[in-house]
Amino acid sequence: MWFLYLLSWIGIVIQISFVILSVAAGLYYVAEIVEEYTVFTCRIIRILILVTMAIHGGLFLFEDLPASMIICGIVSQVMHLLVLRTFPFFELASLPFIGSIVFVTINHYLAFQHFSYVYFPFSQVLAYFTICLWLVPFSFFVSLSANENVLPTLAETRPLNADESDVVTNYFSRRSKRYGLLSFFNYAKESILPQRVKKAF
Image 1 (cartoon, one colour):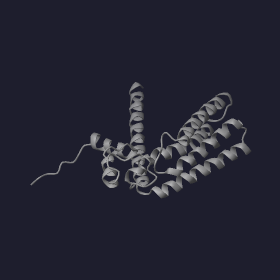
Image 2 (cartoon, helix red, strand yellow):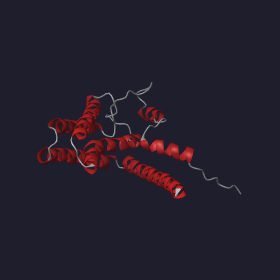
Image 3 (cartoon, one colour):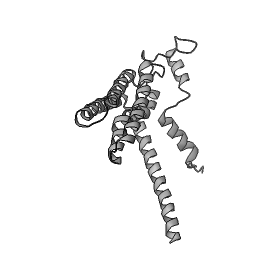
Image 4 (tube, helix red, strand yellow):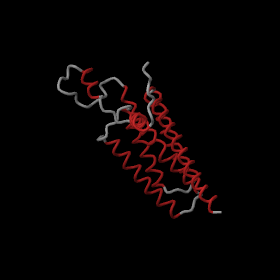
């Protein structure tokens, strides 16, 4: 009896490892697609925001959820639309970006408070959190690496280095450090996975 119990825990660990590897591979693939097709990604995120706003309207009409939670969710989606104006560039100190973080945090608090007092099945609670709270911020998180292959434009508000006349040299000298999701996966691939050694004949 104890041997099969031990095998069940080993099986669970193996299954969780496979799920984590599958999610990481999927995120790597999605991050590469986002980096390649930034305009298409912007359209997809805009559609996700509008669909989420429509879902909040449906929750207001057909469900008995608090109005404060729904209004906060709609305001956070409006803030996401304002953040999308400068896509693929993200201004971390801008009012829409800070406002979207604040409203998503408040919406999480209101949702936890409501679902802890009123019983809903776990699948419905998970559906609310996944679609209404996590889908759009997660799509922004995946698209963080989208601006690494974009040429400098007027939308880039960071000051250039010493010589402002040489835009291209300053742009490529600043690109030495990359902080997106795709660069994280590339770093993990180079440091964790074994490298193939080419034989020299």
